[in-house]
Length: 246
Image (tube, rainbow, N blue to C red):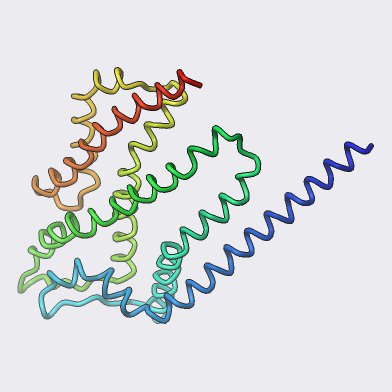
């Protein structure tokens, strides 16, 4: 009976801790959303710059329903708040799960959070500065006296977010490979042996992820992915060595 009571108290404390962390995350997101909404015009300018820099003078972004602009700004502010508050959100998640982790598991948390965050941000920045400008320039080049670009901001935002998320996630390859190697699913020898097929797959993936069909944009996308694949081979070696020493 006493053990059951202790377990109930432990579960109650666990739920109280979860509620506390969730409340802090919600408050942080709310404050971040409010601040980002105040700076929505600046955020709008940053997000649309890859497109507006190549748009002809007579073309501009539009909205096609009465409420579209308001809700798009709301969505824009929420995405920005999520990005700004993500370190705090990750910290709250860490504080909640850390008591249940073993010491050998805790040592992976900081490298995992730092490396995955840097790779994700690196992928987003690469897509924003290197791939999007030439891609949009290619598509806008079809503008003529018969066809004028009138682009819905809602559709542009959807494309922008999906595209950059694709880059951010694809740059997580070394982290993904590390955990697969720890589980014994892959190893460095296997990855090295399959390199030529991986390169072929990377170019196919680059052709899918890159909006522009020109070869230069696809090569610009493929080069960092090939580099990340080579890093993944090294990471798999490290993960395998650590697994043997445990």
